[in-house]
Image (cartoon, rainbow, N blue to C red; front, side):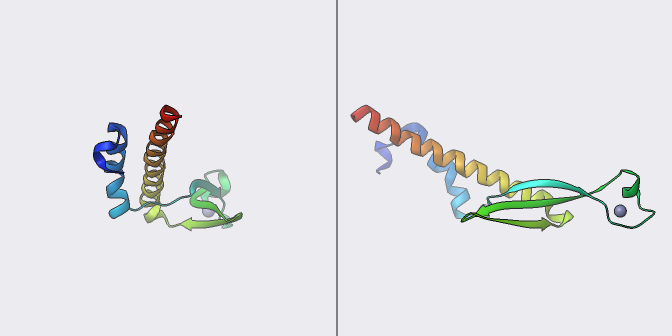
Length: 106
Ligand SMILES: [Zn+2]
């Protein structure tokens, strides 16, 4: 599609998508904070102050997969997941502009 034939929304969406495709990290997955006890008898987790661990899950070809994320990578992984959502949102906007196009000409 030539840029001049695109709607404003499509042009904007494609521009915003560019950094994600060229260099920004993104990952599809659901981050879940799991609470657990470690088993040490005198640990604070035995008194209800449980340890937390971030787990990233996804389903690929019908198979579930999960990864434990180290504490120092939690923030980074959450950002990658947020980036993935941005990519999805932008792609949906571009797709919608073609839905509109087909509806108009139909
Ligand atoms: Zn503990």
